[in-house]
Amino acid sequence: MALVGAGLVSLPAVIQAEEKPSSVLTALSSTTLSGYVDTSAQWNFGTGNANLPPYAFGGSSKADGFNLNVVRLVLEKPIDTADAWSAGYKADLIFGPDANSLATQSSGTKADFGVKQAYVALHAPVGNGLDFKVGVWDTLIGYEVFQSGENPNYTRSYGYSMEPTTHTGLQASYTFCEMFSASAGVANTFGPKINERASQPFNNEAESSKTYMVSFTVTAPTNTGFLAGSTLSACVINGFNSGVPSASGSGENETSWYVGSTLNTPVKGLKVGFAFDDLNVHNLGGETWAVGGYLSYQATEKLSLNARGEYVRDRGEQKLFTTAPERFMEMTLTAQYDLWKNVISRLEFRWDHSLTGEGVWGGTTTGDGHLDNAYMLAANIIYKF
Image (cartoon, rainbow, N blue to C red; front, side, top):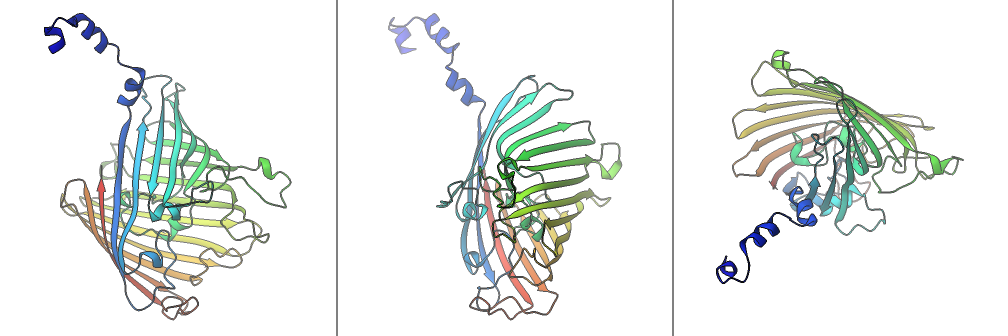
């Protein structure tokens, strides 16, 4: 306006410039930035942390101290379903110890950094709208997710711990109606290593071997009373997994099955859930499966109470949790109170129990386990933005 007042710039020129923003600014205007910082403090009862229960993102490195778990940054341009041929993207980056544990790094070099998701999103005007993801995306399977703040409990279940986490490939999703939606995908492997390929010496078609998956979700419609919004989901994934036991020592084909549900109840604020996971490693004997139950109660606007109970059977050549007994269970109780804006704050008690009397947990050195019970108390603080 000062330049206009001095007669150096005309007002129509300014208006014309503002009417033609650069293509870069136009693209950035529809991109969102989100994420969180996830921290915790943990106390494992007893002396010695060499033999702790083997659930995902746990372990001795987090016992008896304060922890930065993970920092997550997400850049995303969602697809616009109002546009028949809309396109977008998502770059989901994680930093910290949990990035190393997720182990998506294609190079094998971790350094507290990982790409959790990175895909191009595409929308096609087929029927109600067909959506695609091309790149690296979260698995279709499971009751729980990587983002602990979106789970009812801070620590992960054994069901989650035996599932794949991410895939590199193509995913398609379609909503048939209010009640029914489905997704299908084809990926290089079970993952999580980005761009990994199947590498079985005994498979003459290893270079073309792929992992296939399909899932569906049924949602109770609005006219079903208190059940409205309840969901039932199922998924099956079949393909090569380099992280499971193998007679050749280089991974094996496996099939993972899942069915789970979250149900609203007549009691206001109370939800119940269940999950069943089964892992079948091909060409190996044994069994690995877990069944879990969930209770969630929103007591007040700020206070919620969550409980999880789980039974695990894991034995034979395909045994996945090698430091655990063949039969064990866990019980987790979590109280969450949202005192600060944008902050999740919760306190959790977890009990893992051996049902075989082998005394596998506790002790100070590898192989020095001697306890049937492992107890843990943790505080979890997450800031979301």
